Amino acid sequence: MTSDRILVLAGSVRRGSVHGLLARHAAATIDSAGRECLRVDLADFEMPLYHGDLEAEQGVPGAAYRLAELVGDSGALLIASPEYNGAVTPLLKNTVDWVTRIDIGVLRDTYIGLMAASPGRLGGTRGLAMTRTWFENMRLIVHDDELSMPRVGEHIDPSTSGFDSEASAVIDDYVNGYVSGFDEYCQGVPSPD
Ligand SMILES: Cc1cc2nc3c(=O)[nH]c(=O)nc-3n(C[C@H](O)[C@H](O)[C@H](O)COP(=O)(O)O)c2cc1C
Image 1 (tube, rainbow, N blue to C red):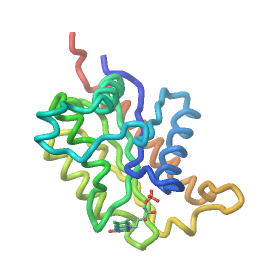
Image 2 (cartoon, rainbow, N blue to C red):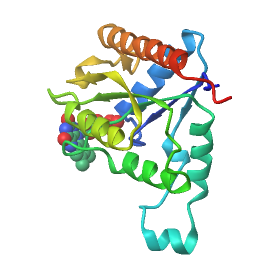
Image 3 (cartoon, protein in one colour):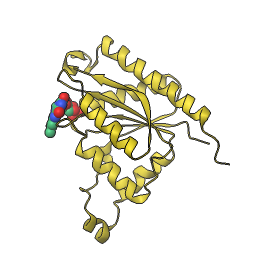
């Protein structure tokens, strides 16, 4: 049976990362819906830039094995990631590349959700589109809807350093829709035995 647990991570480990905040907010929303959630910080899973010689000489990093195990024990993966130059962040790409060196199918059957925010007016939509195409090329399952938050700086409440009420409502709505999508997906997934 598919695990109910939802893994949440951010594609930026910068101190003060907006996507770290988005991941924390989303995890709290999932928790308050009474659902099992585990938020991981990729800063705790440091991996060198993928290089075939490095892999041949030193093997896959232990952090990739630890993360692959967490992914394998979860049914869903919610990602909050910025776009860099209209594309995926190197951190997210590198992390997925290493983890798939353990098992190309590690994310197969994982229900993936995508969220992005941006200081600009496009809200990370180009990175979201690229991430969706990338994951669909890998034959992964991506929730139909995406969260894109433009002009994110205007939605952070300086008194709490969290999202303002307008942004919080948009995030909660997305997360709840994603969780419902995960439930529907689980109902349609046949048990392995
Ligand atoms: C290398 C680089 C490229 C970026 N390219 C884009 C971009 O294409 N579109 C965009 O909206 N923001 C872009 N940004 C700005 C990021 O959206 C912004 O720094 C965001 O806060 C990063 O997310 P974080 O706060 O979670 O680290 C870029 C930032 C960096 C460092």
